[in-house]
Each structure stands twice: as C-alpha cells, then as structure tokens.
Image (cartoon, rainbow, N blue to C red; front, side, top):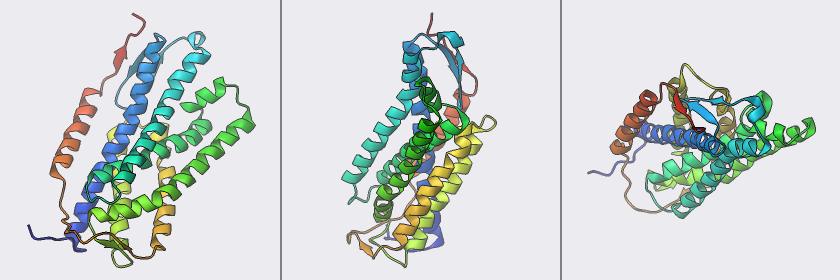
Length: 278
C-alpha cells in the first residue's frame, strides 16, 4: 500500500466516516449505559418497568417511591457515566502517543460521557426529568437547584479545557504533525462534521420517540467543540513522529456499527417489560 495521508477530498471523507462511526457508537454506549442502569436499579426495589430503544416507562405507584429507590435509580446512571468518562480519559492518555484508531472511540466516549452528565444536570433541572428527580427528593430548593445547574455549566467548560489537548493529539492517527496547514482539514473532518452527521443520524435513530435529552444534549457538546477548536487554532505547530501514516476506512468498525445499530433499533422497537416484582 502506498502511504497516503494527503489533504485530499477522498481522505477528508474517509476521516469523516471513521470519526462519525465512533461518534454514533460512543453515544449509544453512554445512552444505553444510563438506560440499563435504571432498568437494573429498578429491579433492586422490585419495581416493574418497561423500555424500548428510546425511553423507559415506570409501572410504579407514586406512593411506592422511596428516598432510597429514587437515589439509586436516578443516581446510578450519572455515577456510572462519570466513572466511564474518567476511565476512558485515562485510557486515552495512555495511548496519546499511539496512532491507533481506537483513540477515536475513547475520545468520543469521554466527550459524550462528560457532556451527558453535565449537560444532563442542566437539562434535568430545566425540564424536571432524570437526575432532577434525585435533587427534588433531596429537597433541594431553587437556590440549590441553580447551584447544581451552575455546576453542570462549569463541568462543560472544564471538559472543554481538559479535552482540547486530547482532541488536538487525535490528529496523530492520520498525520505526523498538526499546524496551520492541516488544522482546518483536521478539525472539520475529525470533529465538526462527525458531530453534525452523528447528531443527525442519532436523531433519525430515535425518531419518532425523540426524548428531551436527545433534543438538547447537543448544546453542551457544541460549547465543548467550539471552545476546543478555538484554543487548538492558537496552538504552535505540534509534531508527533515520523512513522508512516495511512488514511483508510475502518471497514470492520463500519460494518459492525451498522449491523449493531440496526439490530438495536429492530429488537428494541417494541416495549420490553421487566416484571421485577414477580
């Protein structure tokens, strides 16, 4: 194979495809991590529950909810999301000098995890959903809810600053350096277009049952990507190594992700009832 990592139109779309696949798979991983954490946490309290590809229905009388059940059911998902985000960040750091495409998945898992958590706090408080139930059952007043929303906002900002260097160093998957010549090509193909295309594909995946979270969670990611892109544009040239780079489509990942997404959508199209109380 002749080495080719030129800034060509073909290579541009190859990078877009690879990163978009990683974007979609990573988001679905975080989404279903939260969904199934609720399903199994509900089982701990013998709460019957049904779910499909996009949402959960609780078959629980209002009087049967307790402080412990609310804290476990609505707190487990955010906790697991935070832990996964940290683990993914550490794994990415250990591979920062490597040129493996697995870095793309670790990058997007980290971004999705922290954005899902911190943007989720803000969205939950505004629309009184998900983690907001935990805060309400903890008797948070309006001032405390506002403080939690501010925590969510600053969490998004911290994520942007922490991930800026990681996003920049993901360029070494395809290039030997990152400078003013290839930066626009890289940031558009690796980050901006995959975000736009990935978000569109996920919206199509969740139609016709798009939930509030999937409607507004992208705003936090827009902030993160915007801040990181501006900061990277001011970087001095970054040199990686002299190893030969090949830009090619990850066909196994593309085929696997396509089959997985179709299977998830088909198999979970109808509500699945979990009779934990039996």
